[in-house]
Image 1 (cartoon, rainbow, N blue to C red):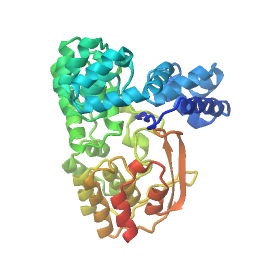
Image 2 (cartoon, helix red, strand yellow):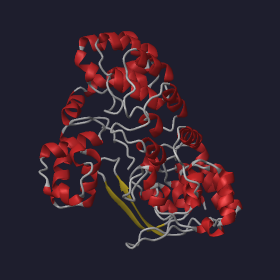
Image 3 (tube, rainbow, N blue to C red):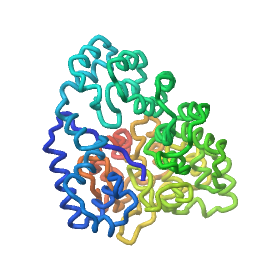
Length: 423
């Protein structure tokens, strides 16, 4: 399952992750399914274990602490502790790097050499040199490297993930290697420039374990919302010899509106068909078979192509579906527990790409086509990128109420919310 790490709060204190580790241990002993899922996703020893195997194995506080550290993006508990202890210095260093104040950065690192190995912002962004690579600051990298930085490989990964190819070239020339898994960053961020660069270097198209399908699965499941980048990345996979099936869902993922139109002509009921997560994210292409693949705001399980077009920001396909007669009030299927039934407006107001200004167009068009802001649905969503990963449930809510009660406000499109409430 594609997932992201949560950030430390602005004023982190070690008591918080300590408490979270104890809570995870308690939840595991109570056999909570969410705790088992978190352990499976974050603890390397249990990555392939089923629930009975996890419950039968020894699981200590140190194991829970490792899971919590990795949820915050750190490789181990000691690194998380060290980052919290150095929080003030790390903040000063972050500001200096962003301001291109090389004199201040060099001074801080010479006076505090331990900072060279401590993540500046998060475990994902990494130590100072990697931090500069994320920001595309090649001259800063060149200042930090001679001070004893050792994170060349991580910095290379981050430069590729962010599409900072000048930084990537320099780091590769100074020792960073084309290790298995190096393509994963460009797939996560749907960055065709970075992926094309790795094709030129003949990098292995696998994850760290040598799984050839894992990079393709990540490109399909990622939290990223960059349709043009996604289409280009999938074309790179096709040129690399990956067999992408001729299905409506793959035409959708590839942004092939003409191809999808042919599928609709051959199979008119396709317009109203509800798709499972397994269909949206096919296990045969490496996606997780657990039915909880991908990362979205409003759930995609049991939704139509119209719901999906909004979540994945496929504007051309969105227009095509409405032209072909898609119902703007079409409901997602309802599962055995009574969850579902949400309309495309729910996806328009809570989604991954909510910060993009063109996302408002989806709601404007739906409303103009007769979408009702008064339809109610019972929706639940598992949130694993927040301080306390858990299910969020909202019963019998309108799209506006779904947005107002959603705990992660960064995923709520406030402009769409205002638009809906004005109706």
